[in-house]
Image (tube, rainbow, N blue to C red; front, side):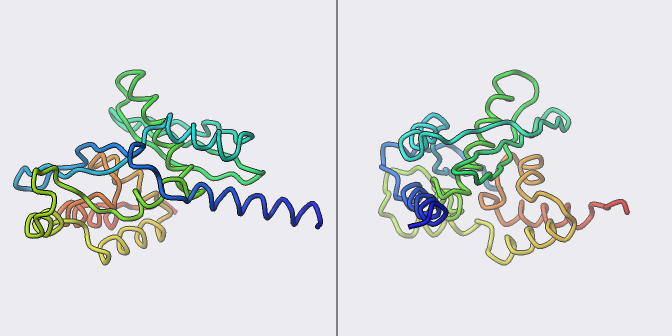
Length: 204
């Protein structure tokens, strides 16, 4: 087997391993957003140290670096990159620019989003499903009520299409406005983001 083919197989094996289902104890929950009625919607996430531990185990020679830091009002946007077997993928994280903790949080979020592009915890970001913390977790009617105001696939498609056409970063714009990713928006917030993107003027 040629060296190039062996390296390709190694990389594919790494992607497959990173894409495996995460153990339940690795997944945390936090409030993602509140709808118009004030109801809290919870989202799943993993902590940065958990992502780093998985990367260390699956591909010990992975590396990372911060590519860019931009301050937008009281928010900071950090672009970070992860490299595995010569392949580099980037992510963007946004947090408060008012203290070091917020800047570090933005960096960690950026690195996690870069890791997602290699498959790590991708289902947590891809599903875009919000959850309510409730005692009756098997209450179907409650679940329907929790998901009723979640951004639609049509809205998500519009958000990413408009952002792409204007060379904008949909995640960055959503984080700057609502402090959450497009997949975690309510329908009304998604409509506001679509209007915002449409109204952005791009200089020639």
